[in-house]
Length: 248
Image (cartoon, rainbow, N blue to C red):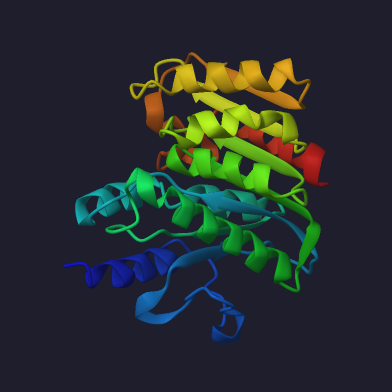
């Protein structure tokens, strides 16, 4: 059954009308055929474009993958909306079976850092205008990536996962973070992410960091930021304004 995953993902890319890069763009990513593992949405016109790398949340098996596909967790609707607004969007996928547990967070982080390097190397991307956005597990990884690099223009974290010990370790290092950050969460998050956001927000403000935290009380829960209509959600305007401020 696991062999069906790349085929399903490739079909998803085509159905969403996003661009599949040519084989010569691989540089560590499989971007065509049965092993495709990334979604790339390019704006119209010529670059260099500002770019957003998207780090998705947890998906561990075929059923979880199908839910992710239907709900947009892979970043499809948001990827398209970002491209329509002038941002090149890149959403790599993680292995859905053996790279899920907490012990694999370092592997996930290495993959995300590789994705950032890949996007910065694209000829139609301005490497000085790259942001990283992540949801849930991907939100934690986004924070960790921001702590590892000083060449990112912005971070967007939605409902970050409080995975031990990595979340607390990241918060303990927050004084070294120098990248502007947009932090979003739904107050009715059923997975308790509001607590993680409050803790992170407090640490960021304590150290005088450039953070904008929004706690939405209009419903939507944990998947507010990864629903099938995420590109058209009411929080889109805050995201869009932040990106235009930091990347334009």
